[in-house]
Image 1 (spheres, chains in turn brown, purple):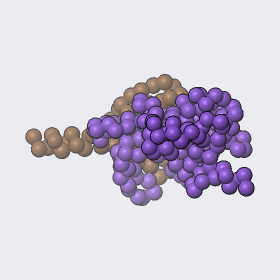
Image 2 (image 1 turned 120 degrees about the vertical axis):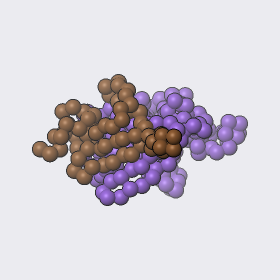
Image 3 (image 1 turned 135 degrees about the vertical axis):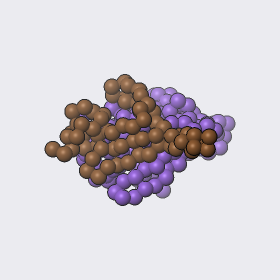
Image 4 (image 1 turned 90 degrees about the vertical axis):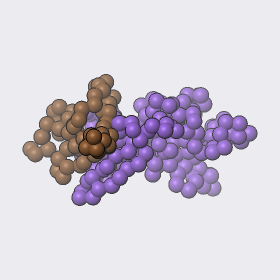
Length: 66
Length: 170
């Protein structure tokens, strides 16, 4: 019971992490709206391209390593 | 002299016969609603970038109210009109579109963080979340930040508006 409550509280919080030399990683409770491609989704985790090189925008496709 | 008249602490003001529009660059997150909706008035490549002669007062008010931050705000030049709508004349937040602002929502802490991918622009994050970058971690409460998506910003990881000049598409 206690554990469930704690889990719920964790889920309600989103963590946004700028990975060094990598993408923007978002986990937790969030709603992603892509205004360019007119898409809306709420996955548990997403990795968004912030280097500008991805061929699969807005997502990271590891192109930053090239 | 005229130059001073157009400035206030933290920004500039622009006037037409009906209203004054205030521009506070430090508050801008480059969500870019202004120039996408009304380039005739808000053109970042022009100096000065705001020209209130470019459209009607009604349309200008509508687009200023779209600004998700306090970077753009407006008031009536006729002070009595401001008194009748809102005491805080620099912050007409009540006029802003509710679907963009979620103002005074008691449940806002429970709401998911809004992550918006702006067309050819940054990632605009809004709500309560933990942000970690460059080895630092900070708690963001009820506010809005924008993360660069083009890789050109001078203030990484934050957007500084350069995607437009860089011609970023994505």
